[in-house]
Amino acid sequence: MPITTDILADGVEALKTALVAERQARQEAEARATGAEAMVAHLKLVIAKLRRERFGPSAERGAKLLDQLELQLEELEASATEDELADKAKSAEAGTIITSFTHKKPVRAPFPEHLPRERVVIPTPTVCPCCGGKLAKLGEDITETLEVVPRQWKVVQTVREKFTCRHCEKITQPPAPFHTIARGRAGASLLAMILCAKYGHHQPLNRQSESFAREGIDLDVSTMADWVGACTANLAPLVELIRSHVLGAARLHGDDTTVPVLTTGKTMTGRVWAYVRDDRPFAGPAPPAALFYYSRNRDGEHPKRHLAGYGGILQADAYGGFNGLYDAKRSPGPITEAACWSHGRRKFFVLADLAKSAPGKKQGSPLALEAVRQIDAIFAIEREINRLPAEQRLAVRTIRIAPLVSELESWMRSERARLSRHADVAKAMDYMLKRWAAFTRFLSDGRICLTNNAAERALRGIAIGRKNWLFAGSDRGGERAASMYTLIATAKLNSIDPQAWLADVLRRIADHPARRLHELLPWNWHSPTAGLAVAA
Image 1 (cartoon, helix red, strand yellow):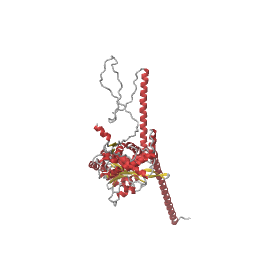
Image 2 (cartoon, one colour):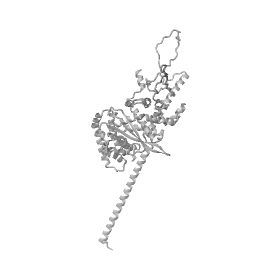
Image 3 (cartoon, one colour):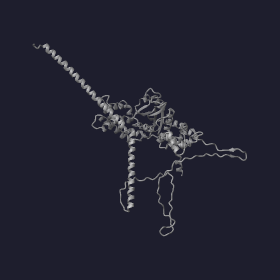
């Protein structure tokens, strides 16, 4: 049968249709393969991140590693000293002189001058041991040894003597002094020790009670809990003064952390909020202070209530609950947002750390490494201008840091355009680029810091203490803890011993004039023992 034109045309059309179908099927297969490869790479990255969170470095794990290294150093030092003394003992027994290696020891610093000195004079002979002649003192050599006196308990008896007049028979007696706690039997120093141990060193009252019992002092937990509640009420005016001082700042650091709270048969997750005033980075004259709040949850209504009348600058992370504070319609006005570069850097650092820990593997990101490098260059200059006046900081930032920030932005926007929106490094870039105005606000105001580390440092003690006290007993307990954290953290920020300060304040606050209450604030307080030392 002869091949006609129609048959040839039909065959060509069929081949075209088959070719198109085959090409489409191949493209779909390639797309599925590419999608599978992308999913595999994504899952590998997720696994690597989870492994890093589980086994990789973190702040707490780093602290544990540091403790382990210090323990190892301690053991090596002890072993070296033990071996050295053993060698000397063997040499003495053998009657020979052996020059052994002596490990270098640090230079001994003198003991603090404020410590009391107890003189122990070794008896000397009354006559010369050689010729029996009379001795005359030439001088003395003093060797100082540090000792400790165990904690001493005592009962203070306050005696009010009564006198009667022989003429009119009227009885005279001094008025009763103010007690730290009304009708209480605890002294100010004991109360300060209990408060600092509970809220400063994270020792629950039941553990303190057990420790006291081993020393022969029976203090029931319920009794100490009554004392804690009474002290919190007595110290509340100081908390209010610190609150007014903190909220009067032009710039605040804000952050929060979780606090387990006991409920019926279980625990719920509450929050502790910290707002820190610290003007020292730009040489501000105002003393630093920290303010803490407690809440049952993390709703945005809480920061709105905490900062209801505030209108300055807030340095914080990108928590959505803060967004209402930045609203232009807010009354009395919007708070100015300043972002934290540590949070932005951290997202890149996680990916960069994976790249360094697993070289040659695809889960690491060279883009993240480059981002960390550029951000670290900004941090390096910022460290040079720490504690300089705001005007000088702004001048240095304008000349040296602004070009680096502009270069970083251009690089991120250029690289972001080439990345999928699902890529982790793209999410890290979006975190900064979507908030770029807040991230670059420090370039126009020398008072703004590069990071929100001040608030994170204030919350660090709570995060560490959670492992000791496990949970707060109630919402009232959380509020009480927030008040005590405010006092103790503020004392520490002003380089004041919280226990010594609280002991003196508790001793004086009951009869201290209300108009002069500011004299008891940490930055206005002077240690009574220091005053006595100066007078002496």
